Image 1: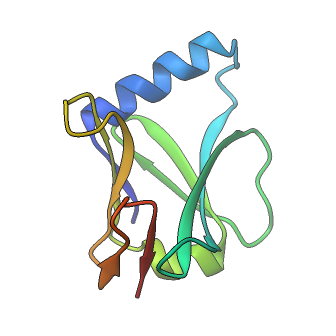
Image 2: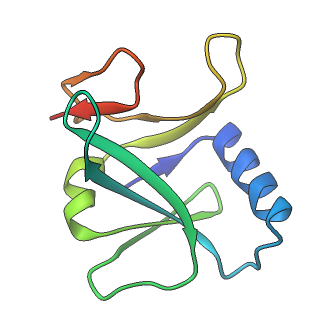
Length: 108
């Protein structure tokens, strides 16, 4: 399962409205190679699923990931912070054993 916090849900809803996306769009989350620690997160709005996609709904929000990325994301919660220490989305990933100083990449 991949979860989403209340703050992240509100921000995603705001972004979808700004981009004038219809209700059939969902958040696609994936893990790709790169960054200081070896793996990095990628998020995009999408409206087409693929055969191997894993589909989750949490907090009235549809999240989709490919099977390979799901192995890294299982149990992860997408968060959003508006605080002084950093504004933006971040992943609370119990599978990550370390992350880089900027928090943009991780390792398992």
